[in-house]
Amino acid sequence: MFRLTDLVRVLLVRSFKPFTFTNEYEKTVDYSDCNRLGLYIHIPFCRSVCGFCPYCKEKFEKQKYDRYIDSLIKEIHLKGSCHEGKKVVTSLYFGGGTPAMAADRIMEIVDTVNEYYTITEGIGIELHPDDVRPDVLVKLKDAGITKVSIGIQSFLGKHSSILHRPSVDPSLLAEVLGQVRFETVSMDFIFALPGQTIDDLKYDIETAFSIGANHVAIYPFIDFSFADRKVKSMNKKEKRVLMDRMTDYFEEKGYFRKSIWTFASCREADYSSMSRETFLGFGCSAATALKDRFDINTFSVEEYCNRIERSGFPTALTLRFKSRQRMLYYLFWTAYSMKVDKKAFRDFFGVSLYIKFGFEILFAKLLGYITTTDGNLYLTKKGAYYFHYYESFYTLSYIDKMWGLLRNEAFPEEMKL
Image (cartoon, rainbow, N blue to C red; front, side):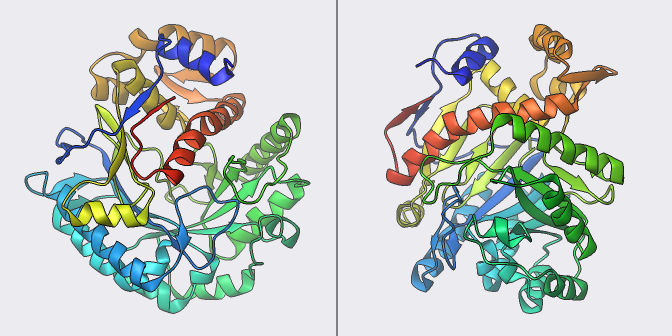
């Protein structure tokens, strides 16, 4: 069946050929020409596994955890040694899973990273509310963590129960966050849950800012095909109304929009592991995007460790970008920040944004998706909604298929999207 995502891809890529990922396996990685490189580290372990969460994760086992962290450190050495001298990078983010479960070894991991990379814009880590404790936060701060993102999902029991998440006591969070301070304290919430209203979202947002957050992320609920627990998603019309009212509310309150889904109470607060031109990933399921290719590591903790122990990269699938594919990948994730800088595009690709996408830019302006100032592109409120609309299709048509395959096969032969 020819889907909407297929049509959009054909029109934008100007090709009917599928994206073909192979299991090609390299023993080096060249990122010397990446000027704004980001780093990502994946820790897959959790105390308990949330059924709605699509990310690579499994229940904590001490022996497996110790072996994994040893392998992770070895992968950092392997990739770090591919570059002569220390590489300047923008940032480092820890995701999961529940990465703070590795709090006792975070300093060891960060010290290894610092052997090869100079981080200029700070280190962020995702936290489960259960990890917001003084002893954990002190260890993280001592290791150099400057930003934390706490996965609340909702302070309201009627919504957290849908996701089978425990309730969170805001007063306890406020007390601990007042003791150990970070540059950015972000809190994650999910919107478009069944029965969710703008008043529910306002409550979550204001509660977050009142107890110590200076940044919030409001992510749409996406029902992955392989999720263990199914949640009925909100219909398109209701979602559009809710998203528009949420955006209006942030504007009325004077908050700063940092990206499609994130807002801050002060201009300096920032937390995003997504909008990077290029990045290196470490750990199972971590992705790497360079100028010419996209790699994703195996989702299997066991096979990840086996490959690393043999001094090999744990790459499961690789896509060799065609020129226009790479440009579209760049534009998709750059637009997440609500802006596409024409100079940055030219610096990255050596060609004008308008030469390559002049027709598409004109069409997007006519539809009301973007405005332009000094040649730079800015998403409108309507454009932000349709970014979400197409991202949902992209996620369910592409990411869902890729992650679904990798959950079942450690090293597939090939995948076509």
